[in-house]
Length: 121
Image: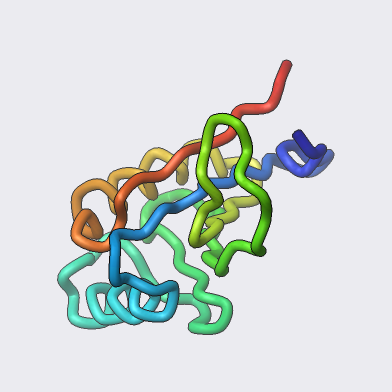
């Protein structure tokens, strides 16, 4: 594990996303932008389109930046992800809760699964 999971000024949480067959990182991003832009997903707003950066409209300030994952070898317990979502800031852990809800409830047609690596204490 890298030291990117915690920073002096806050937290850094990563979520590794696995997309369903036939869904590319570009089509995933287009779906997120379309759902938020049309009001289908009202709790989120788009901050930037490239790299795709979204923020929950609630009281938390941490943003979620979603980028294609760099090619890497398969680890023993997980296949390489298609996308990596990074959340930084002191409330990143709280935003993680809302982001996983977005993935599981609103983007389930595109996402096959996701996992959150937990650093050792």
